[in-house]
Amino acid sequence: MRKITLIALLVAAWSITFGQTRYIDQVFDGVTLTDSEIYGANTTIITLLDTSIARPIKIPLFTDIYEPTGDTLDSRPLVILLKTGNFLPQVLNGSIYGTRKDSALVEVANRLAKMGYVVASTDYREGWNPFQETQPARALQLIQAAYRGIQDVRSAVKYFKLTAAAGGNPHRIDPDKIVLWGMGTGGYMSLGATYLDQFIEIITTTNPPGKFLTDLTGDGNPDPMVIPSINGDLEVDSFGIVPPGGLLIFAAGDTLSFPNHQGIPYSVNLCVNMGGALGDISWMDANEAPLISFHVPLDNNAPYNDDVLRVPTTGDAIVQVQGSFAAVTKANELGLNDVFAGIDDPMTDAAKAASAAAGHEYVEGLYPLNIVPHDTAGSVDGSPWNWWDSNFWSQIQPSQCPTGAPVAMCNWNLVSLQGAPFTSAARGRTYIDTIMGYFAPRAVAALGLDQTSSVTPLEEAQVGLFLAPNPIIDQFRIRTNQTAPIRSASLYNMEGKELGRWNKINQNELRVERFSLPSGTYLMRLQFDEGIITKKLIFK
Image (cartoon, rainbow, N blue to C red; front, side, top):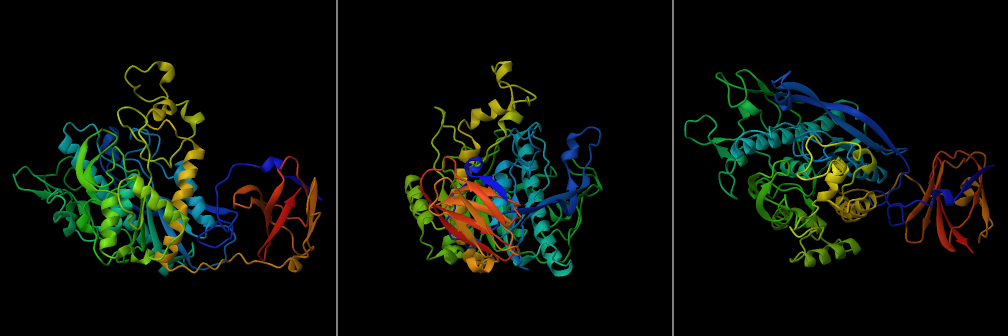
């Protein structure tokens, strides 16, 4: 008989609402990861910074797929997660974030998968020159980098639609239930890929007009900052090739965009933004997806309402954009968020209170994350959901130490703490608790999800469950029929907080030691091949 102890597994875990409803709660114990699946290929210009290459080249585009282990449904909603990073590689972008393995991104991916979603943590192309001599030149490169990122997000959506229609649907997704979810820079991508759906919208901006026009050729006339024949089209159905004579940093004949999954229609059904902004408010119209947004109102870089974006890498003022408050307000005016009407729960009440603290009326779909400045200059951590491995980054030194910093203080952990001194995994997960709690019922409404779980509740007699004694003083035993081995078990308190989890038990008899677990009532969830049983425990 296998013996397990509670004391060894009393670890801090996220809070969940006990009830085990698919798409609201984490109804699965495990997640299956497919690492580095290729969803397309296109041109990167990051190689221009490498003197050994110094030309644009075609590269594969990768995504990591997270799926709920043991799920039996044939058609699951898909969430495409998009990283932050200012369109530059990690560290070169001035931070320790910027990969699809960032802690917060992996945390959200795992939680969503355990809720029953398929999740694709997806790369998009990086590349611009932060060392370009003039601000207009840097701004132009950054805008073009954002355009490439939007193309890649659209390529990813088309890839999954293609695999569902003609590739055997290996990840069992529902191609009509797709969510774009971006963090930081990824938020700009989720917003842009959702609401920028015609090239003409780049030229006809309203806030302000002409923001994406500049003189590319030196003839004194304004040109679009991106041109489909050169940069490729939004649909990623055509080549983009530099014309004879070259253009800016490119040589004649350079291929800047390759077609990806030609002819596959593009559409998404819900947009989620964490700390990003919309390129122009005119991009939103009444036939587009609902919007859920999370944003720090005092964010020093990404505007909360309507202001100029400043790129953290260089501090440059780039372009006027519309942040979460402006974008979600417009979504409500257009009726996009009408689908959320009637959601009235504690998280909605919390969002209303946060809105009041931010100085405005509640706007459905917007959750302000009110962070106070951490220094006299008014610096604010604009991404409080993030964290990093402090042990690892304490060993990594920046290429250039901050001015006046002693050598002992010159490592990426300490440098990063200057901008986010309260960062920790516990803090990040607490913010993600809030984000998931607000997102879950709105996603159900927006996607029209059937919340019936493929994890079936069982009767005790079906598995021959015996648990004694109960009430419990020191230890208790669990026994089941030989044909019904226990696959896993989880322990919760009555507030729904997971206290411990045992995976891969695969036995019919267990003895569980109480040790120092406080007196009170608890719930034990037992997973079997056919479903689950939840049993109330009382410790004296």
